[in-house]
Image (cartoon, rainbow over all chains, first blue to last red; front, side, top):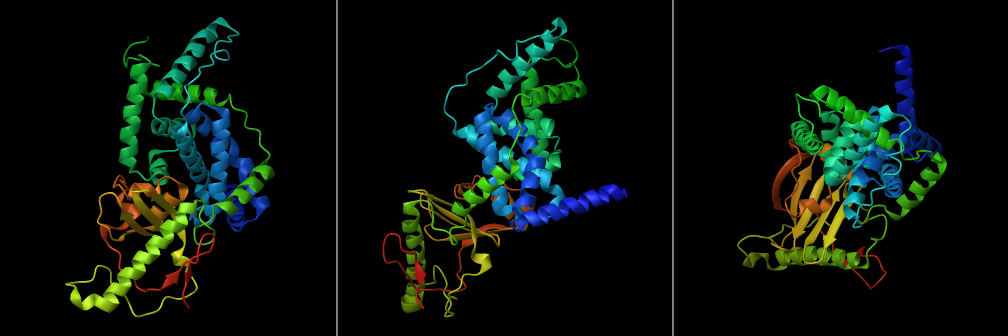
Amino acid sequence: MTDSLVRDHAALVAVVRSAATGDEVAFARLVADHHAPMLRVAYVITDDPEIARDAVQSAWTRAWLHLRSLRDPLQIRSWLIAIAANEARKASGRRRREWVVDISSEVEIDAPDQQGDALDLLDLRRVLRSLSPEQRALIALRYLAGLDSSEIARHLGMSASGVRSRLARTLERIRHDLDIRPETDR
Amino acid sequence: MTDQTSFDRRLTDLLGRIADRVDTDVDAMAVTRLAATRALTRGTVWAQPLDMPRAWLWAAVVLALAAAFSAGVLIGGGGRSGPIVSASPTPAPTVLLASATVIAHYQGFHSGYVYVYGDGRVLSLNDRSGPWVLMERRLTPEGVDLVRSGAVEPSAFLDGTTQLPDMAWADSKVQPFQSPESAICFWIGSGSPIRAAP
């Protein structure tokens, strides 16, 4: 481990420990550093920016209440993102309105070679909407936040093998719904 | 998107582009202050009044049941083949211990209730299928963290849907709660806290 990495870790541990004692400045620093990845994950799960923001604010409240229970401050990133995913999953489950698909932003194509990308985006959003909030949370945590199976398992109360098998099933469904065949191009 | 690896990469790329659509600008101090303010109204049930009026009724029922069981054992225990809930002559301390902090709870009408404590105890009573006695299990600190983070809802302990990893359980066996101490409590009406008799 390099000296600068050691210093970074030490600084992070100090900030987390200060925030856990109710230091608002230290906590605000955590917000500044982690709000964006939490919101991005929450948005993929809820598909609604306002619901995602509410979910992340709830996550920060939960973090304020329970930060002192975090035993390894170096896990703060995955811990916060998992809390945001949980809040987003719950908010998404409570939502009862119909999905309204706004495709205007997806179909704004500047160049002909972007057409395929735009269609992929549309297709993926459609498939994500057909998944359960739990499945969207797993996909977002793994492929957007980059958490590995062990981290996801630790924070969601599952076994790592359980996470892997659920991810595999969800990926298989996405591939099927996108009509992606393993050996041939669409 | 043809093979697994390129599919994974493509999925990561597309998810990133979907996430790019949300504006992530934030006033960190405003978020912090709102979190701190909301936390004040969402503290533990022992530190704060419960947020549901009916919760006091549930708490009163729990304590009344505990007191009734204890009294039954102390006064008429000789007539039973065995106590439902054991009682100790040791009076309860009037100051609540840190381990008595409830970190999550659930109450459901005709469903039951669950209290998860900071020391890992999970006390529950299933009002739907019984048995109608307080039952106890124990979580490890990792299991407590899962409840604290919201990954596990306390209601899940009631209906047996929890499938926690082994590392989350210090003792997953459900057994009747055995109180190490007892107290006679009273409640003098709406809005008044339940107090232990001196």
